[in-house]
Amino acid sequence: MCEYRPWKGGLVHSGILASAQWFFTRIIPQISLYISEQTQNKTRRISSFIITGHSLGAGAAAVLTMMVVDHIEQLRELSNNPEFKVHCYSYAPVASVSHDLSEKYKDHIDSFVCQDDLVARLSYGTASCAKELIMDSLIAVDGLGGSSKVNSNPATRKECFDIIQTRRKEIYHNKEPRYPL
Image (tube, rainbow, N blue to C red; front, side, top):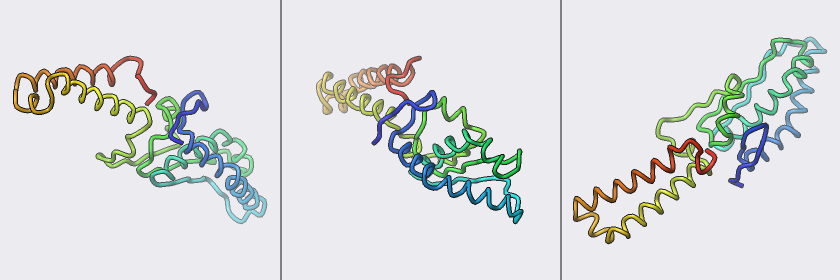
C-alpha cells in the first residue's frame, strides 16, 4: 500500500488515502448530522471541528482534514456559522502527501514531529533514495578492492567517501528528484 497516487494536483500515499476515505464516507456524515441537529435545536453553537491522530492515524487524519476542508462551506451552512473552522493536529505523522499538497492545506494542519523521528521523515521516495545510496556505497567499496582495503588505507577510504558524496549529491540535490518525496 506504500505507493503514491495522484490526488488533488499532488501525490498521496494510497493506503493512507484509503483509510481517510473510509472515515470520510462513514464517520463524517454522522458528524455533519450532529452539527446540523445541534444548530437546529439551538442546544449549542458549534464553532469548529478538530481532527487528530498519531503515526499512521496522523497521516490519515491529515488527509481526512484535506477532504473535509474541501467541504467547509457545507459545514458552515450546517452550523449556521460563517466562521466555522476545521483543523488537524497530527502527532508523529507518516509522510502521506507531497509537499505541494501539504503547502495547500498548511493553514488547517499542524504536525508535531520529534527531531530524530525517522518514521515521520520516511516516505517511499526517501526510502528509495536511501536504498540507491546504500547500493552505490556497496558498489564503490567493492570497486575499490573491498571493505578491508577501504578500511585500512586512508587514501582509498577518502576516495570511497568522495564517490559516495558525489552520488549523494546526485540523488538528493537534483532539481528534479529521482523519486517523488
